[in-house]
Image (cartoon, rainbow, N blue to C red; front, top):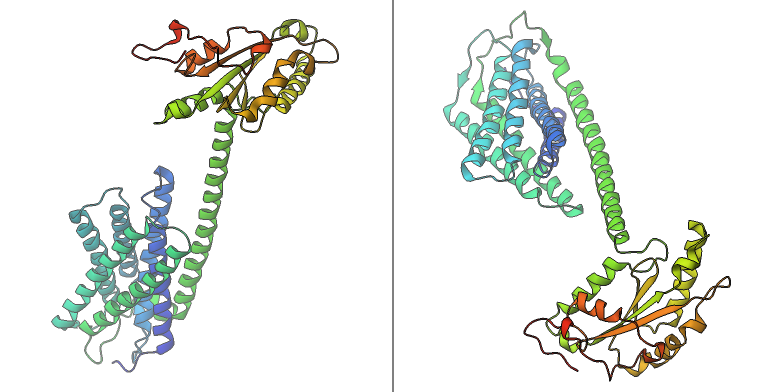
Length: 428
């Protein structure tokens, strides 16, 4: 009944197996991190494509074995063999896609998938409903089942491993793994063909509803096209999802940054200043990082803003903040603390590099104003550790009004006992 195999059909069956294995790895690798509806989508697609691919490989492989009579198949048994492959693939991928997976579950997934492949293969052969019962070679039968188990276990293990990988490297590993899996799937099929043979002269049932002509190259072409289109669409969908995730991350970062930026002036806001202070104070060597806070408040802000629209007032505030920023030395951190007030955080405040800045700030009433109305400034300063050792205490100390001529002079700063934390001794 059998002669030599049809090599083009053997090659087609291997190509189908490669694409089916690749699809299974591709979809299975994305199940762990997928959520709810998305996970169901990946699972359904992976099960259908993997099951259909293995099923197609089987029937194309059967057509590679020329028979003396036309090959036909029972429609119901053929459909059941396809369903067995799809259901087994779905159950296996569902189990392997769990966030946590122990050895018993992995073994169960492997047996489900291997069982589906074995049932699909032998039921697919029985679907010819030959006129004489088949003969089994127990050795080849055992080897075919063993190959199915090993191939399924390797496929699922690779799915699991690839779940934590991304990028071009993972795609290359998936392709190599798909080649190995395809070789195992084809090995199981052709070993199974040797395990189950029919007597010479046996013919398929005359009432079989499915002609074998459609189960060769036409089915292979259809399945290859289906797998290729599914993979292309899926790759595009994955790329789209990643682009959406990147844009969302960028938007979240932008929103987070806006939480620390004054929307009118573009300067750091009160939250940003407090975070910067907490960061400095939390350092192990905070005492070795001296700094000062200089408080700059527009005392006549209410009079300045009366009669102005929001847009005009914002323009004035921008001009004032830009002028203030021009007065600062490079390492100074200027923040807008409230509608009328600014804070300058001056690192290493007694360094000579700040001398000209202090001189300019002593003349702030003459240097910074508006054409429409003079600006009256209320100023103050505090120094760590001299006037406080916490964010709240340093800010409170800086808000105590001082003569502008005292800005930048820290040698005579007096410790306020109310600003000292219990158990701390501050410099005076």
